[in-house]
Structure formats: C-alpha cells, structure tokens
Length: 295
Image (tube, rainbow, N blue to C red; front, top):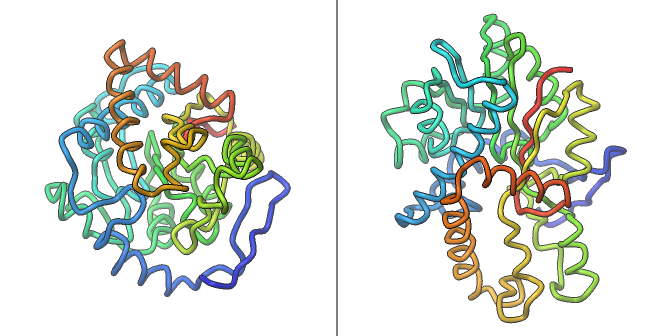
C-alpha cells in the first residue's frame, strides 16, 4: 500500500485509510501470509521458539482463569478467532477447553497442527462469526491473538463479541503495542528513522495501552486484567542492539527476549504474569493483552 494515511480515532488508536478491499485481503492471507515468513509466522521454529510459544499461551490461559475466577470446567468452550498455526488452540485444548477456531487460511495449521483442522472453520472471519451468531452458538471464552490490527473493521469485530459469549464469558485480545511511549521516544531521539511498526496491508489498526483500554470500554467491555509481553523495543535504546538501525541485530534480540522470558517464567507463571501486568501499566511491552467481560 503505497498511498495511505493514518487516521486517529477519538479513543487514540490509529487506522489506515483507505483500506484494502476485502478481496485483496483474502488473497493476501490465503496465498501469501503463511506461505512466507511474515511477522510472528515462519516456515519452522527452533526448540526455544516452540517453548516460548507454549509459555505465552499458558500465560494467557492463566489470565483467562483469573478473569473467570476459576479453572476451566468440563464443557467450557473456547473460540479462537484467527487461530493461525494452532499453538494457542492446542494449549487451550490441553488445559481442558473444548476448542474451536476460525482463520482465513489453513496453511499454517496444516504445517504445525494438522490434527486440529476438523475444529477450525476457514474463510472470512466476519462472515463466519455472523454464521455462528445466527446459529445461536456461543463460547465461554473468545480469544483473538494478533487479529484486531489486521481487520478492516475493528469496531465491527468487537461489536460481535458480546453475542458470541455466554453469560459471564471472557474475551482475551492481544495486539501489538504501537505508537507506544518507547517507540515515540526512539523516534524523537533519532534512534530510528521511521515508524517501523506501521506496516500495511499486514497491519491496518494501531493500538497502545491507553487507546486499547479506552476502545474496549467504549465498546461495552469491563477490563478484568491486562498484561504486556517482553519489551523488545528496549533494545532500540542501545546502538549495539538497535535492530531497526541494524537489521542484523534482529535475530539476536529475538533470541535474547525468549531466553529472558523463559528464565523469568522459571520463578513461577503467576509471577511472570504479574510482571506483564506491571509492564502494561507503564505502557511498555511489544504486545498488549486485555482480558475483559461484557460490562
């Protein structure tokens, strides 16, 4: 997308205008996104990366349990919108949830978790959500991990969630932390020469801790718990590890982030989650997760 502008909503989040057409987005995700290495997706993962993905899934599941006020019970259902390669879907299944998923493409799931293909519906997310709502189906938990930043109509997607949740149901939404205080400081200090986090058509919407919280409140959700992931953007503040100025530092920064996360989690998953909560409170962390219920 060569010609676009960023429009700021009253809540503070930003969106790309004009948006790509639904047909262009379908083609991008069905034919390109998982077939290459885009964002957090890859053709393969190291043992460290697999362990790290399992850790982040368990962290989110613990946050969901805290928001629910209990551990999963027999019959509790979980719907993951944008289940991708299936890492979280598998973790939720192992935690005791009856899982279902939605995604544009089956390529990632085929590669890493083909045994979950029969639990996932593929195609346009909004169309499939509308089908579930029309059929009267609902879940105890709805999860969207790195989905909201990709969709043409972020508010329309959020507006559907209350109709997909059972009474006292919980939603967990993860997005990148963009236009964060740290990113803006790096730009102001000349440590990076561009808004590197702005990347259409992959990302159409941009949120930080404040704007995501405001948006969720306006859409009728009460935030029960919020946490952030490791603040890899901290590496931008040192010339020896600035992976934007020197892309060769990207993989070492990624490996360091995973090693530190896995090391800290050895002190206990509750403490690891609480660290993430503190990072959210100060606006740090590369990704943000809000766990909420309908107000």
